Image (cartoon, rainbow, N blue to C red; front, side, top):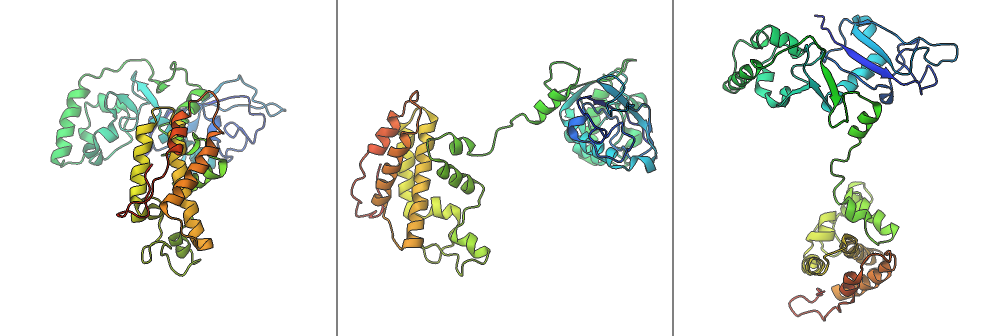
Length: 374
């Protein structure tokens, strides 16, 4: 079954070679680089069926497109044997991501996918009406086809589940308010300045930060040396060479932790959940939260210092058979933080951090002989 689709590819003439600009070259099998595709608007998700190339970009003897700077290639229908090329396969891969960042204002509805484009207040109907979508026999419908035939009934299974029937009733009421016009559908990048789609808008949308990796600010916004930051980066990505990790790779006979025989040395146990460190962490975190109001780098530095000292104490036990108690770890922590504070810019207030590391470590209590208080 042939399905119609419309795609527009805007190509910039900054690409100087025919090999780099695959769309419009004499060899249609060359791949398409995502940076060359500026605008793709498809009314159907299946682009492997019948299409013909309505326009191609011509080249001069220098390899630069002979037409204007922004050429538009209308891809209406292309036969199956011509559509199965690296060029069109690369374009197909971009369509879902392109639809995810664009919004459509309905005109005639011919180039807007009913299920896969964002054209209504409900966003993508495939996600908003999942039960009804699962009962649809033709998921490549355009908005125009659905509106002109008076609904989706002709493209649905004979029997609908109760959930799908409820979603159908909601959709029928909404379709009654849709009016098509003779104008073409207008597509723009979500959050873009206008409906004129530019490559810069696409790149900015795709590269927009969504929230960042977990603990990234703690990792890099601190006064710790680079080797400590790299240590924490490895820890964040669960690549720390603990005894359990080395055992899984065949480098150790036992995964047990040196401090806790019979317990596998995983990262969470080594740095947080070990009973030997429970009171240490609770007091350290309480001191950090009560002492630091600003800046955040000071609190990040203190947390990095505690992790670094725990790691160094573990290595002292493994490589030198030297077991450090909590007061010893506290003194080492104070020495490290004192040096790290010197790395802070003068404009930052690091007095809370200095006050924190200057707090003396009292003698261990009888109930917790290996725990200190900050």
